[in-house]
Length: 190
Figure 1: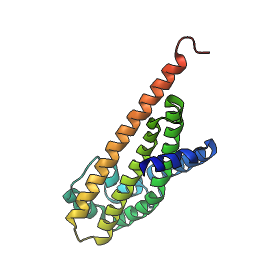
Figure 2 (figure 1 turned 90 degrees about the vertical axis):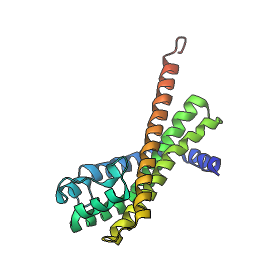
Figure 3 (figure 1 turned 180 degrees about the vertical axis):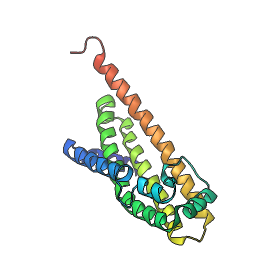
Figure 4 (figure 1 turned 135 degrees about the vertical axis):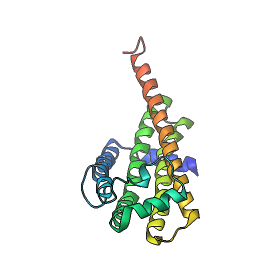
């Protein structure tokens, strides 16, 4: 099944499609981090006296999540819900954009038929963990002031998994990038 998904992503690759996705990713990045719209991290931090999105933490326990929900206050919880709705759209966009980029780079280094091309699934894994995290956080927000320890714990674990996969993916990008650069700079290359 994973091979089929990897091959589907590889078939979707085109420079135009990938570029369009990265433009959308840049827009959402601005929206979440630099806009003052009532779904951004700055808007949440403003109403919650400096409390950031749980998404930005490496890990948190269920109790940490419950405390954050309390600290956000009613306005902050509403902002977070709006953020999560937008993040549900953002996750598949960045997942596919980075998967297409990894497809391009892995093909350039290893060839199109290499099993290494399945590395293009790493960004999809990040997006999946982001969706799981978003689902859990959204449930915590709509259940507030109720506290579901299972959902709170699952949310923290999904967040940690998202960041671990992100670190692995960045390491893969760096490795492939350095190998491609070394290949390009190798003596005798014209």
